Length: 443
Ligand SMILES: *Cc1c(COP(=O)(O)O)cnc(C)c1O
View 1 (cartoon, rainbow, N blue to C red):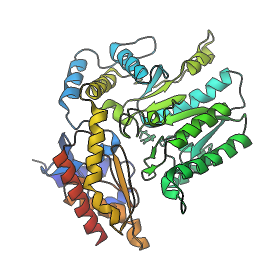
View 2 (cartoon, protein in one colour):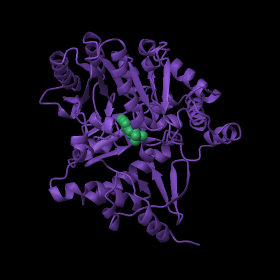
View 3 (cartoon, rainbow, N blue to C red):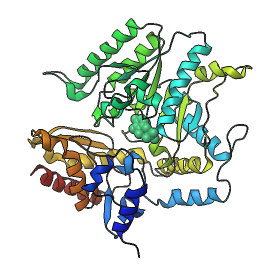
View 4 (cartoon, rainbow, N blue to C red):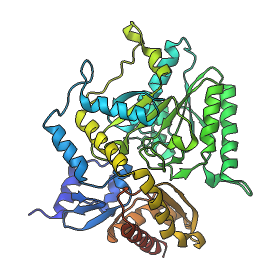
């Protein structure tokens, strides 16, 4: 039988891993996964790892989930794929209806792609083209928030403000305007999270005023900017953003790729502010973490802007796997679990259990900004030494593996984004393991 080391060697020879400086694998371990079950992933040696970050934020109901597995096996024998231009099928129809209903039909039209970045590209292009079809050809600019992350294709990168990902490609990008972050961690003396949010909204208004008639859309990750390090803001920012977008006639794009599907405490993060955007992007969790699927939901108004006899006024964007039946069926099974198991309410309790399990962090001097939004929990490690700070994340990742834990801090922001199936005992275990790793890395 082939050893684990053999698989690692073969992978490093021919697989170019994402978001990785490959040379770091000279010291950082690479884990060949053999199978998964529930919250656990198992390597080729049979060692297990608690998937505390839902395999990059995609897995909602555990690995090898029986209900999603059964739905996929059934779908596989009916239809694996058919093109969605000129053809349609039950999974994509049912999914679009269900999603529309979840927004009270405010966002009644779903356009499909496969990955998150493509959904962002679609929202940007749709906004631009909708204005153009309406004769507003001057509206060509986009606004994003400091620290934003919307994916890494060229269009999505243009509205992404994480320099590590963007720097090398600067000259390729049609840069967006970047406005002040509502991140609650930026509070000055005496400021509340809402104060920071309103201060940031004033900066947005300044740009909207300056560029009046030129801006197509503002794009935001509602409530939590995940990739920049779980930066959280007060929902008042979203309400103010909606008002400003209405006032200046600019589209609002909510990128709920990471924060949608119940992650922040409501099914859509925008619900927390009682607003609907003009475009809502979903991916990651929507298929339960099973298959690549993304989509953009939009309004009747936007849909009508394209509805015409002239083909060029249509939205001609497409991807080969648009609306893939297997992926849609996985999404339907995922939504069925939400409905049948009252997941949103159950998560509220789990979120409280996570808070209690980490209550000790509140007076830990090595920790700043303990924060939580639904099923996202995070804190920042205080590491003064620059060298140790720069290697913190990698050291944490390696130490976590020793504790049967899959966690990858972003810089010094340690976070949990676990699957929703975590039991009370597993939450206690997760907290204990996390703290063991933290002690070791800080020692
Ligand atoms: C992950 C992510 C994306 C990009 O999705 P991919 O499937 O990785 O292309 C876009 N926006 C947000 C907020 C994300 O978290």
